[in-house]
Structures are given as structure tokens and as C-alpha cells.
Image (spheres, rainbow, N blue to C red):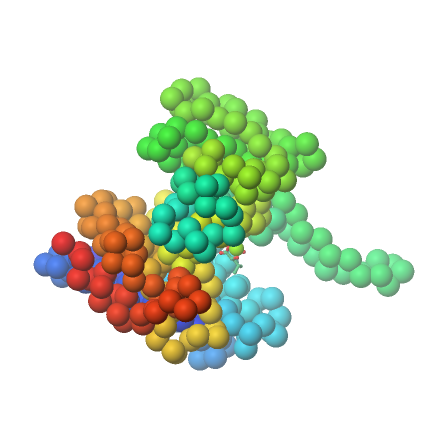
Length: 356
Ligand code: IPM
Ligand code: MG
């Protein structure tokens, strides 16, 4: 039995996770009986009901899971608490608990949505990049401190810390992803300033020999940020540490104008975690107009990476591509100013109808 933990979370999370589950059930058909779905609390909703963003009951379910599908967490209501009691702490705690050290964010242009890209269409049209972000180390999880000097002046400190093995395991995912794609790996760091980046670069160099078919180049993070908007189509796979990856993946997510369609997969040795890139959109929560496609495509990644069901994953991806590109359906976030748009349910129905 495959155990799938569903974490709807906050805002539009419950709507979009429900949509993805409908699509999963439809694509699995008779195989559905091999899967067990269970719902658990995370984020602001969990804070409201239990006082904690990642309750013990959820942690137990995560540790027993084969895969996890998350909607979104956060919202203005919970922005007031101390750091460890915010919805985001639930997310970071879960990443660490699951040990999902590699966050994969594929960004690919949909030709019919390029009108919403902030870039000129001829720059955005060939974008097809996979960002791999280290997710359980670096400055997010390094030693931190807040205190005051003898003079009374306050200070705060965060540490960017990496061991060789932490670098090696995520860079390996980068090489492997590149082997399945266009065989170009860009390793992003700040080796002109940071020691952690110099070590990162050394580790990448030491691994090149194991992947002779992959071309590697090293790019500084500031320069990479620039190249992502000037010549984004030149990137195939980017691998980088946690904070750089957080920033670059948001930048990459808007290149094609279709952030509502972007999925992500976070992988380690155990259960994978799948979630759309976009947030909880509290302003449209409960209105039934959220775009479910990012979550539906995340569910496709789940079938591919956690269960080896490449065929079913591809069927979902093709159905989404069809409704967006051929049928021209748009949820509100994708529609132009005076263009008509469909509801979350209508979009989900359309995907299911095209699951061939
Ligand atoms: C992301 C988000 C999170 C992060 C926040 C919500 C803690 O920005 O998944 O990219 O910084 O990792
Ligand atoms: Mg982010």
C-alpha cells in the first residue's frame, strides 16, 4: 500500500489539493486501491487548531508516508507570532524531518501564456530550466543567534554552513538531472567571497569525472540572476545552495508568465514532498477560483519520482498542456484583463476529461 499524506494547509491550499486528488484518482483508475490518502494539519490552520505549525500527529504521519502532497502555508493572520510559531516554521520543520535535501523546480514556457511574461516573448519563449536547490542545509539551518553587545547594541547572526557530503548529494542530483536533459549543469555560488561556496565549487569539480557526458560551468550568483533575465534559454540544470536557490527559483518562476502552473518536488532518501511554487493566496481563498494546475502537476511529479509511474505522470502533464494550449482554458490568474475565466472545479474537470 502506498501512503500519501495530504497537507492542504492554508488559503487556497484545501481547494487545490482536493483538485489534485481528484485527478490522481482519475488517472490511477483500478490502481487506486494500492494508494491510501490521509489528510493532516500544517501551517496556520494547524496553529489555530493545535497551537503548533507542525503538530506531532502530522509528524508521525510524515514519518510513515511514502509521499507528501502539500497545498500552501501562510497568511497575514499568522504573520504576528514568534519565528518558531509561524506557518513557515512548519514547512522548514517538515523539510528537515523528511530529509528532502534536493528541491527540483522545473520551469518551462507554455507558448500560449507568454503574453503574461514580464520578458519580451522572444527572450522567454525557449525557457526550459530545472533549478535544483539544496533544501535542508546552509544559512536556513545554520547556527543563529540574537543578542546584544556589552554596549547594549543588538546584533543578529546566521551561519551558512555546509559539509562536503551535504554538497555532494545534492550536486549528484544535479548531474543526474542534467544527464536526462540537455547535459548542461550550471553550479551557482559566491566563491569570490564565501568559503562555503569555495568548498561547494571544489566538490562539484571533484565529481565531474563521474559524469563525463555532462558539461559543467560555475557561475556567481549575482551574475546568474542577471543571465536568467537576459538569456534564460541558455540554462539547462542549475544547482545551488539553499538561500541562493530560494531567490533564483522565484526569479525563474516568473520568467514565463505561468507561475500558477509550476510544480516542485523535494527529494531525499525517503518520502518525497510535492507542492506548487505559488503561495496560499489568502485574498482568493474560498472563492473557488484558484488555479489548481501547479498542484495537479506536482501530483504528476509525485507519481514519477516517488512511485516510478512515468506513464501516468505524462498523461496528467499532457492533459494539462492540452487544456491550457489547445482548449485555451484560463483560471483568473492566467486570464488577460477582459478574458473569460473558469473556476477551480471547471479547470479540474477539463483536465480529467482529457486524461485519455
Ligand atoms: C519557498 C518559500 C519558503 C522558503 C518560505 C515560505 C520559508 O519561500 O519554498 O521557496 O524560503 O524556503
Ligand atoms: Mg521561496
